[in-house]
Image (cartoon, rainbow, N blue to C red; front, side):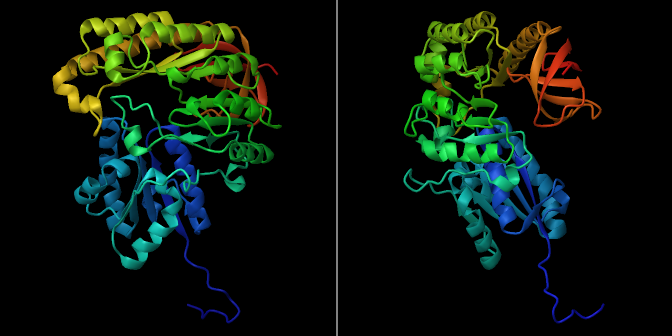
Length: 450
């Protein structure tokens, strides 16, 4: 080996990180922000876990199945750690709720990091390396001190669409939901801070922003959510604006009016109903009846005809009878959702539903599965019917790049947030007119005409 020259500066060895993200858009945004922090520390991203010097799992605790996936992944990544001494960290909601259990159950875990502690990742890594001790950072940060994660120009450049976090937490405390215990009380980001990030994203070529929060339409960052949408839609360079997730009780008349008036606000609304049975909705602490939900939905559709509406439904909630589930199926027929995300109920720690499950009456697992399968089957049929009604139409697609299923085709999304795979030459970040020739339950297919 040749000796190092005197004027040659020794470069530190390259370190690589791998992030495995579970769960919602909030987690996706947090993972992106953690990636930016790691890049500032000199790490390079890798898509191959076996090449990583740091593996970070950003986790979801909303359902038991998500937690089981995390444990399974940890088992796989243990082999990487043993082979190359990789640091292994657990972030997100499972880290927040099950810190002590995870540290005990997974002795090869180096650190846990709660959702509020994303900004403390450099400090945590430093402690792990210097002390060679396991570190847990899951303390809540009050509203005066909390810093919302923010996208960076360098990593946003070249993207067509980007998430913008506008609030976190939830004050509704639905009886089945662990979010108040993982993300805390609602905190809204100041409106000027949100607008500053959106302007920055527009300046580097981002054309679509999705405003996100656990209960995004309860935003109170100096203006209400309807006014925030109006101001974001007015930012030069932003062509499309979306948001998720909403609570039906916060679907105000002002928000409905904004949906009808703002051209840049895309005609897609995710409005979780969870059940169509009033007794079950009451036990869920949802704050509305099935009739009230359908009334708000109808007013939304009057304001924005042909708006695509998607929803969440829980099957097998404690005490749910066959008759209760039939009420849910009846509501599905009336609402005719573009897509239904159906889930089997699973008890979550510290929630009222888990505490009262035996009292209210647990539903046998086989019945839960049968109900959710029936729900999803009917949901797919309705989705297909809605998709087939698009055949022959010409729709405007915001192009995102090569199709994920066929590299010879392009793909993007319609204003209604439907995936569109098409034959054409349009570049990512441009708008293309596509004539739809075929429809599936989850995607549309066609040819670019301009």
